[in-house]
Length: 393
Image (cartoon, rainbow, N blue to C red; front, side):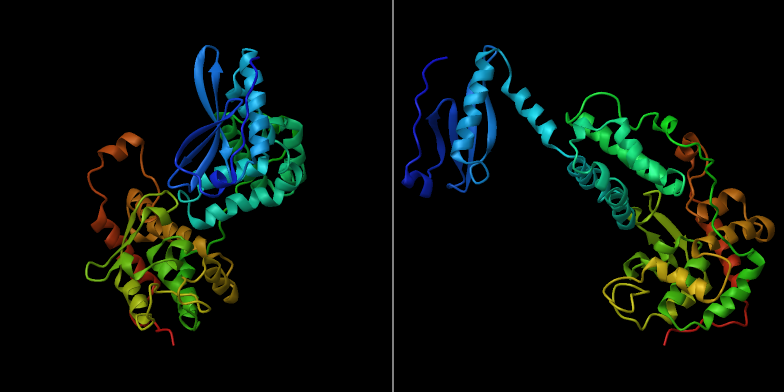
């Protein structure tokens, strides 16, 4: 290798660097821009017959001595016919831990694309069940044996959680492979063959029989809580608890009697338009005096909506053998057995995907008026004519 000539930055250059590029010897350069605010180390050299520039790092994070050592090593790699960039990426793979990779996936693929609650549960499940076992391990070196150590303790005792954790682990390793942080087969592939055989049962939501809903609703009217009003609204609109609890006045058009739930708050990530029955409008009228963004604000912080779990606590307080989400099932059964609602319309009220992709592509109407009539009938069934909706005090 040719003899290297090095020079150091003077105190003046360090204190008041001028924009531009300056050679410090041994292939090391300092790049300064933005009036000295942006400074970085760069290695320049010939790699396999072509001149290349490869960034080493910012000056405030990489010392001059460390930058010199890196430039010297990369110069040796290039002189021997190798590629310093490959060396750098190999080092990066060796240093990136599973926890770092998981948080990167969470930031890039989950936050902003899923509901806030799902985004929180996504990373929380890995923090609770995976980080203690493999969080500090390089993502490049994790094997199926490591995955067995993560899933084994929960595979039999907590099957639904174990399945979710496995899916999220696989997502992290897929991302790591594409990002060049690991090679080979995803360690989650076929992992079930190494775990105990478990018959996973579908857990159905506990729901009242549709005939019992009017009596429950009558009892619900006597509960003087904002969560009870939110639960009334949820039952009458047949939406999910989180969708009702998080409603905003901005989403609701009282004149058109429509509630437009934006895609980011829906499970299917598609806007859902809910026709509002007279009974649902009466619930909203009962909370109109509560100023602010939300019809159903949190009692502890009016700047935030009431939490969906508050609706479930109301159900539990009334000693009903049901959960809040189960009222959607009650509506579906009523629609089929008593309401005279077409199955397709009932499914669309519930914001379920109806028909094949081709059918959905050619559907020209969202049968809004049929859905409006279905919810109007449901409202008249749930709230008898003689019943009034109680305003929150």
